[in-house]
Each structure stands twice: as structure tokens, then as C-alpha cells.
Length: 196
Image 1: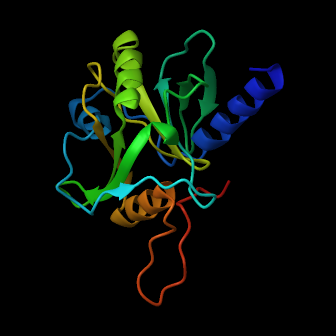
Image 2: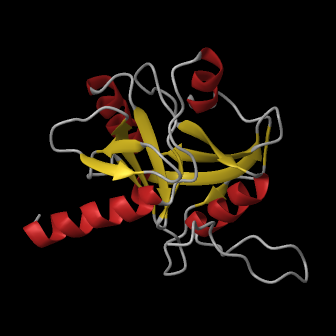
Image 3: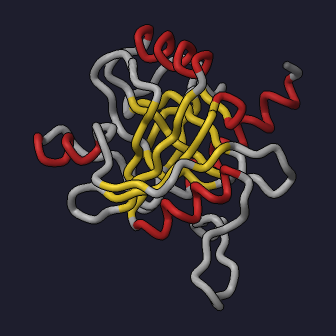
């Protein structure tokens, strides 16, 4: 990869992560539970297959940490905090075989990404080599979540808390390449963005 390409990737990550609405939580038991990958959503919509088309939003998952790491980029979060991100994604949209939206037990929005066998192999290897970090989920230019993990990922389905059910629905349809979710008669919606 050329130096210019590396810079563009780093700038894209910085923009994506600066759109995060919440800083990583502290180490208390309650906040740690909120930032862990969800084990299973309460309900989910039908899984959307991944379509190859120009409408589809990009999805990337990066390794991230709250502590500095050599070669990782420090990114300021809104409203406060810093996240250190490895600029090469572990997972891209090409590693997905499906995506769906759902809710957790408290009614919050969940985005479930379904990995291909190769995607799972890559994620397992990365999380085994880098225990106890975070997975920064970026859709388009917006970081939607950065949950922690404690052990190597072995599941093909990952559930990320993304705030509201509507956020999950919009992101799932955009990444699937089937267009934004909208209620009948409503204006088309866009992938959630933080105003970047």
C-alpha cells in the first residue's frame, strides 16, 4: 500500500471514529457489561443477504483500544475520550454473508453481522492475537459501536448495540445494499451519521 493510501485510510478512520457519540466506558461492572459484544439479540428481522451494488454502504471492523499502541492512530471521541485504532480493518463488507437488525432485552437497537467462514477465521485470529481489546464497527463514515471482547471471537454472528432499533434497521438495509429502511409514505432515511 502506498504512503498516500495509508494516509487516506488513517484519515478515514479518524473521521469515522470522531463521529462516535459516546466515549468508551470505564471499568466498572455495569459499564463493562454495556460495552461487551451482545451474546444474542432478543428479536431480529429477517437476515438480509449482502448485495453487490453501488448503493451499499461500506462496513468495516477495526481493532481498537483505550491505551496507546505502537503504530495505531489516536482518535479523539465526541464528547470526550480517546480511542487508539489499528488503521487496517480486520473485517470488511466483503467478509459478510448477511446482516440483520434487532433489539436487545431492554429494547435497544442491535446490528447483527453474519461472517463468512473466511471472515470468522480472520476475526478469530485477530482477537486471539490481541486479547481484551475492542471492535470498532464503522458503517460508511460513522462509528456505531466499539464493544470490548474478553476472549477470541468464535461466533459467526456478532451483535453490536447501536442505540435505537431504527439505527439498526437503517444500517442493516444500507450495508445489505437494499436501500434505507422507511415506513410506508415516509421520506427515505440515510445511514445514521454524526454530522461529519
